[in-house]
Length: 223
Ligand code: TMP
Image (cartoon, rainbow, N blue to C red; front, top):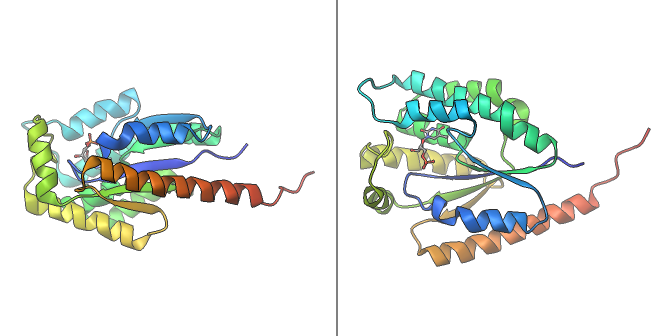
């Protein structure tokens, strides 16, 4: 049985990814694969508790490194309990945010050294943790923050100012530029139906490529 694929959704707060998640899930399932839908921080009961600690505005602000370690503690639990077992058994995983969020928010936003994040990534995920595909919603910050304000109930990251969110966006763009094959970048400021049409075409093309690669893969030597 072939390993499942890990597909992640990424982008700043208010970038528009959650609006599109439903049909993306349906399109993946239409490939005839089993799919787990999940999110970060979170995805298991313990990791969801850590999510609350990281995102709820509280009297005691976590120190930046403490925040980074909490995010990775949640990720480790999610990875070993849920994501990796699913992938191992051939199930695909659609994860709303993953490792690129940490580079963007704790790296870009909080300004923590990217080398610390890379070290933790290596410990926590090992070599198999690179997503197969990342759908990156790249949305102008003023437009994205307006959407966030309209939603209300701002989390700790959403309460940060426009300059902070520009740093998050710029860190995301660096990730995309460094590994363009892994990403499909979508201009999230476009109207939702346009975003959907563009993304649907790109995803359909990517799935067809994967399928043709799988069908020409040489047989494993037996015995
Ligand atoms: P969401 O509901 O939009 O996914 O919100 C999750 C928040 O968590 C979002 O503001 C980004 C933040 N976050 C980090 O700061 N670091 C991370 O590693 C992850 C996964 C999320």
